[in-house]
Length: 66
Figure 1 (cartoon, rainbow, N blue to C red):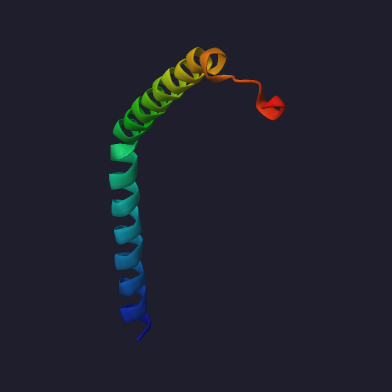
Figure 2: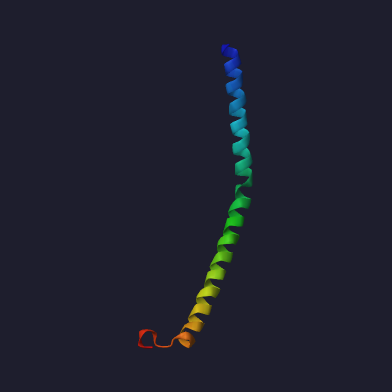
């Protein structure tokens, strides 16, 4: 019984090591993709801020004084 549990524990340990190896193997690609997404979001944000800044003076009509 004890050898069976030892063998199963060894198999579980091998499975965990394999999964960790696969995750660390993909980590550089994942970091690159996240940085690309972050750059795209920053660019979209900049465009929206520029559009809002360009439209604000034209769209102001006096607010509460109308």
